[in-house]
Structure formats: structure tokens, C-alpha cells
Amino acid sequence: MDLKKRNIIAEQFLLIMKQKLDLHPKIPHFDFKFKGTGDYMGIPSINNPEGVYLSKLKELTGVTDNEFLQVLNYCYSQKFIMGAQQYIRLTSQGMQKANEREEKMIEEISRDEMLEQKDKLNKTTKLTSTDKQVLERFFGMESGYVLNFSNNKFAEFFEENFHVNIYDGKYNYASGSKANRLRAFWNSESNAVVSASIEKLIEYWQTDCLLSNIPMNDRQQKLADMCLNIAQKIRGKYSEHFTRQKEEDEFLNKVFSQIDFSGLGIDPNLQTILKQRLNEIEKCLKSDISLGALFLIGSTLEGLLLGVAKQYPDKFNKAEKAPKGTDNKVKPFREWTLNALIEVSCEIGCLGLDVKKYSHGLRDFRNYIHPIEQLKCHFIPDIHTVQISKQVLLAAIQDLSDFNISQKTISKIC
Image (tube, rainbow, N blue to C red; front, side, top):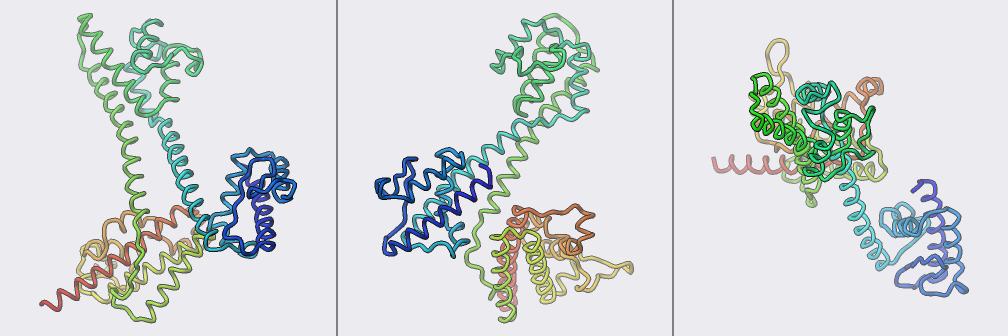
């Protein structure tokens, strides 16, 4: 939906909600069932000017019923309402209804976006120019043919194995030869299907050689092996992407609801500052201030790790990854970068591997404070990078707290 239209509908709806609540402040909750006819909270349209107005608003903006309902439902959501307190007040029941609506919407939108992303990736083939050169040489595509297929056999092959009509207009690329149709097939189908087609074509070639008593020379066999490797590679890349995506999603979904700074063994006044910083980070996230949030997260993590390093200087200075100067001596802690602090903290067991794995967006945060350096690096953090970075910080606080408590326990036992 057009963003401008959405905002117009939302603003008008919020205004009407305010007017309705001003007139009926004691209603237990506010509900609106849009039917496109002016029906409004079960009140006939003749006594319901708000419903009539919204029906006309839908017509004027030219959106569908579903799009209009989506905006109205979004207006109920806590995020929208919290950002528009000057327009509306809701009872506790109303907020409960808002949260229920929001959760359902987020679930539906997230599922649709995930399917769309998977579908998009699934239809993006990972064949490089070198891969294509090898495949085309093996299948003899330079002349427009593919192996020894006739037109009929070529059509049968794709119908039997992939249930597609290779002579459909979808695959009518350039001259429309068998080679060009195979190129179009590879460009338009998923990695999994492209991989399977390469393997099936090699299987066809091997069977034909055996049945026709045609010897396979070393060069052909090497090319066949290269083609199989290409098929496995693109299938592997496809699988690896979703494995990485799944791991990242699991990390993002970890809940650190009870952040306890007391286990860090730091000054109570500093704990207060840390809590304030976490609140500031949340505000940046809600307002989509990605760069500001990243600076806050990076500096907070750096400060925490520096504090731990000063608590356990022997462990940090003796680590294999401790940064050294030109004199081959370990640098003073004030000269350590965030990257060095993370590497050494993971080495000595202060931090888990998750923090190291997902901290790439934070490691050079100091460079981006200077606009010229940010321009040189072409660095523009998005909200996803910030969300990952926030999880890194929360995970680090948990890990550092656990580490400090364990060290204190060990020292008492010893």
C-alpha cells in the first residue's frame, strides 16, 4: 500500500477514535467493524456519521477493504498508539485488544515476509560465469544443441523429470534453441531444481554412453565431475544460507528479560548509567535511529569489556590474541580496540561464541563516528544490524556476569 495513503487513513481514524472516546469516555473498549457501508460498532449508519465518513475515506483513497482494515487494525496496535498519545487514550481492555491484534498481525506479516524472502532466494541461481562455461562445454551447448537431444526427447526429459514444458514461452530465450532454453531454465528456476537438472543431464549422458557403447574418456569424465561439483555447490549454498538464517533468527529470539548488572561486580552508580543506556538504545530502536543506537551499543560493550580486562589483567595480557605493539609487547588496555577486546574475551572464556559471531556490525563503530570515514566505508546500518548488535550487548552482559561470578566462586574455594 502507498505510504502516503496509509498515513492519511491512520491520521483520520485516530482523530475519529479521539472524538468517539471524548463523547463516550466510559466505554470498556473501542471497536470498529468496517463493512464498507458505514456500519460502526453495530450502530446503523444513519446514527453513525463516523462510519459513513470512514467509508467515504476508503473510497477516496482507492484502497481495498483488506488494505483499509489492515490500517485500522494497525491503529489499534500498541506501537502506533504509544506514538500518538496526544490523539487517543485507551482503557486497559482496549490496550489488551490492541496487543492481541498486533501480535496476530506481526505473526501474519512475518510469515508472509519469510515466505517471500525464501521464494526470492529460491529463484536466484548461484551459477557463476565460470560454472556456466564448464556446464556449456560439457553439454555441448556452443552450437545451440544440448548433448544429443532431439526436440521431442528434450521436451520429454523436462516433462518427466521436472513436470515443465521446456518449449513454453517462459523459456523462449534468444533464438529459442535447446541450449538457449536450458539457459533460460537455469536462470528462472530455483537452485534446488537447477542442481537436480545438472545431475539428471549427467545421468542421461552416462546412460546414453553405456547403451551406445561409447567410451568415456578422461577429459569427459573430469568435466562431468566438475559439473557434479557445481550442482552440489549451488545446492550447498542454498542450504547454508537458510542454516545461517535459522541460527541468526534463534539468536535474535533469545530473551534476556532479567538483565542483572550486580553480577558484573561494578560500581552501583555505573550500573545506573548502564540501565540508562539500555533505555536510550530502546528509544533509538523505536525511533529507527540506527547509527545512534550502534554508537551507544558499541561504546557500552567496549566499556564493559575494558572494565573486565582491568579486573583480570593477567588473563587478558597473557592471551594469545592480546594485541602487541612494534616492540612485541602487549599494548596498554586503553589502546585496545573493541575487536581485540572481543577476541581476547572469547579466548579466555568471558564471552560466548555467539557474541563474537554476530558482533561484526559493532567492531569498527568508532570509525563511523567520523562522517568521512563512514563515507569511505559506505557504512549505513539498518535496523536489523542494530537489533543483532543489541542482542550481542545483552548476551555479553549475561556472559560477563556469569564469568565474574564463577571466578569469584573459584577464588573462594581456592
